[in-house]
Every structure is written in structure tokens, then in C-alpha cells.
Image 1 (cartoon, protein in one colour):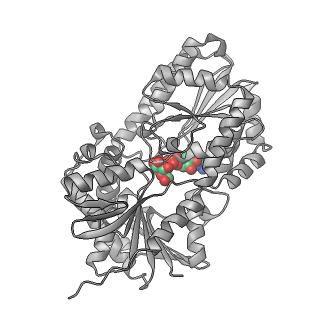
Image 2 (cartoon, helix red, strand yellow):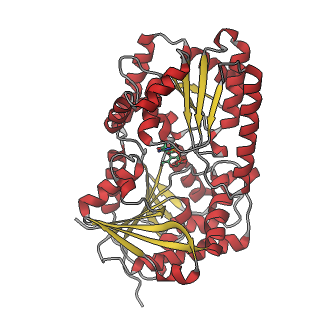
Image 3 (cartoon, protein in one colour):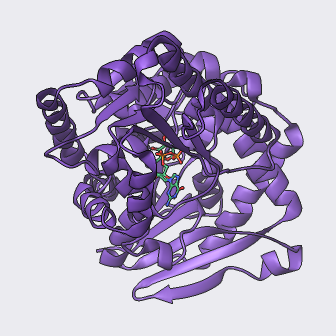
Length: 465
Ligand code: GDG
């Protein structure tokens, strides 16, 4: 079988691909191990131009090569902090109000994509298949194609694809969609995302769509929906093993029999944390019998803290948590434990298992793996309840969740009341329904379906000189 080359903005370290870290890195590494190959991308370091130009740095792990490059400060600012995270991320999450478009940053975004593509070319073999991930790298295939690369190249978008009316807010929207059309396969998280892309192709690119076949900008490509998932058994095992460990027992003891609501999100405005805190506040206001008897643990490790909107959300949350705690705390009771740090994966899974409710309420989310991890971590004999936003991609699969509109503070507060009081038989029934979906769309199925489709596409003809 041909080798696989994975390209992503950040490359997992060899240790992150081992079982204990879990998640996407393990899933992608599994595919790389089977065929041998390369994982290529940014190392996460900001370096001088001289050092950047020396890369890629190669690290071997069995048949897999980890190939990473550092980015000079200007490239980091324009490509990563600028166009990717201050323009594409907010608009793709329907937050045009937070987006900042800057022509120089966009030029930097394209320049870095092209520079990265040329770094990869040296490592490519003729029948490698190339799998590019996420919004940072939309023009990557176009850069490879212009350099004469004819390999099969696929792209998976981890975040939502916005409806055309939203996408039009990005001044170079057409160039971006044209770049996407240089891939052989473009994969989306949900049917809604694929529909939005097709809608753009028909109405704004004068292209045609026939089933999953798209013709536009003189290119032909295939699109598909690949629900990303988790490995449920691995999570269940981590959660169960962690239950007996000291940290988890300490937390349990500190709760003194109170019910536990768990939330875990990267600190990001798309995750709906402010609305969630307010819904919890409303719940305490309307249900005095629960005051002192339920704790919300919110774990939110900071990300992208040098992008201004991320500093604002952090301040807002600190204010909200402080305000609500000021209102309802007692000498021995803090309603919201807001933890701004990263925890080990096994610890998160065990806390999920200890809790009665998983509160996952993003305002917009490609899939949301936390929702899936929460379900997989539950004890089948006494499962907690998933309260899930209708705007997470996962909502399309997890029909056993209590669904909420996160903008509806009262509705979310009512859902919390319902989840906390839910009888065991109903909890078990909902858990069973969610687990069936988790198994159907697990991480292995996502990866294998995408790669089968990519391998099945025709090779591009090299351009005649
Ligand atoms: C993007 C899309 C899509 C979180 N805090 C800690 C920690 N995490 C882990 C979670 C989960 C992952 O990070 C987050 O994944 P999500 O899917 O929830 O969200 P994004 O990071 O926004 O991911 C999203 C995803 O890509 C995959 O396609 O589902 O829609 O936005 O695995 O558990 N892990 C550890 N400590 C933490 O404190 N160890």
C-alpha cells in the first residue's frame, strides 16, 4: 500500500501519539504506522529565519518520520495568529463580529502555505497519498500542484464550513474555495457543512454538484462527510482505571456528596462558556434546593492567548465566575470551580465518570470530541447525562443527549434540572443510544473511510509543459 503523508498545522510529538495521550494524535498515528509515512507540519516553535530555513527536523519512530519546521516571528504573526485565528476561525464559527481581515496577513498565510509545501516536496515519493488537515492549510494543495505534484491529496476540515452568506464576509472567499478545489477529496464533519460548501459552489462559483462530485474552477473533486469520533473502549478503560487514583478520590471527597457537573473546553469564545455560567447561575437562582448541593467544574486550558479576543474571553469568564461564586458561595461551598489549566487525559476521563452531568454547550463547533469522550467514560450501570448544544456537530449523532440551544439561558437551566433529576432507567436508555452512535462513528471508521475514498480517486495528470 502507498505511504501516507499527514500534514497538519501542529505535529504531535512521538510521545503524544502513544496510548496514554489518546485522541486524534493516536488515531492518525495508527494509520501512519500501518503504511509507514511522514507527519509533517509546524513544530510550534517561533525561530529565526535562518533556523526555519534549515528545517525540516526529522525524527524517526519505526516506519513513521516526524518532520517539523519552526516559523519565523513574522510568519507566525501573519499565518497563524493573524489570518488563521483572527479571520478564518471566527468567521467559520459564525463570529464575523470578532474577525479582523488584513491583506498582509492573508498574503502571509498564502506565503507560509507555499513555503511549507516546498519543504514537504523534498520528502515526497511518487505514490504517497497526502492528507492535509484543517483551516490553516487550505491553499496547501494548490501550492503543491503549482510545483507539479500529482499525488492524491485530501483535505479534512475540522471546524464548521459556514453558509455562503457568512463566508462572503471574508474578502478573498473565492480564492479560498478555488484552493479547496485543488484537492482530490474534501471532507467535512457534518452534512450541513458539506451542504454549505455545495451551496457556495452552485451559487457563487458557477460550478456544478452531482452527488458528491464537484466541478468548479476547471477542477473536479469529491466531497464527503466523515464524522470524527473517539475510541470508546480506550476511554472507558482510562476512566475506570483513574477512578481509584488519589487525585480523583480527593476530588470526590472534597465534593462531600454534592452532585458534579463537568465541562471541559479549550478557552475559546466558540465554546459558549459565558452563556453556560449564566445558565448555571439561573439554575441556582430558580432552584434554591440545589444551592450547596451541586458543583460545576469547568476545566478550560488557555489557547491562542496572544490573540486579543482570547484575552477578552478570559477576562469575561474570570469576572462571571467570580460574580456567580460571590453570589452563591458558602463557607464550605463554591458553586463554580473554574480551572484555567491543562489536566492529564486520564484525569479528565475519570472526572467525567464521577460526574452526574456533562455540560457541553458550544455556540458553534465542528464536532466536539468532549461530548463523545463524556459518554464513552460513563459507568454503564450508573451513567451521567450529556447536556449538549444543538450547534455542535456531535448533536447530529448523539440523539440520547438532552439537547439545548445555548443562547437560551432558561432552557439550558431547565435541561440541567432535568438531567440532575433523571431516573436511572432513562439515563441508561440514553447512554445506550449514544454509545451505539459512538461505536458506529469511531475514530478508526473516520480515518479509514476518508483514506479509502482518497485512495479510490484518480491520480492527477501531470501538466503538459
Ligand atoms: C477541533 C474542532 C472538532 C481539552 N482540555 C484538555 C484536553 N482537552 C482535549 C479534549 C478533546 C480535545 O482536547 C478538544 O477537542 P474538541 O473536539 O472538543 O474541540 P477543539 O479543540 O476545538 O477541536 C472540533 C475537533 O477539532 C476534532 O475534529 O471536534 O469541533 O473545533 O479531546 O479532551 N486534554 C487534556 N487536558 C486538558 O486540559 N489532556
